[in-house]
Image (cartoon, rainbow, N blue to C red; front, top):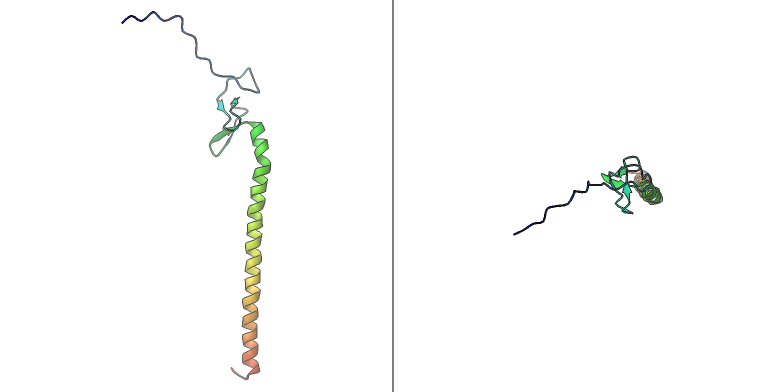
Length: 103
């Protein structure tokens, strides 16, 4: 089989950062798929994101954090109500025992 000689090889060119065309990209943003340089990259849980996508995620993160705070508040309120209820039962039981002349 005949293979023609290869022409001059083109150097491998890495993509350039979408925000900084003078810089070489180190990866791509997993959200918008744009190439990003080291300065633009914000790794969150080991995944690269660009600054614009991180800013877009900030309200979502705040909302999720507020949900977690609300869940903890509900747990605290539920514990307080249970404590009042059972404390009241114990108080009534002691009151009944003392009223009936026991113990």
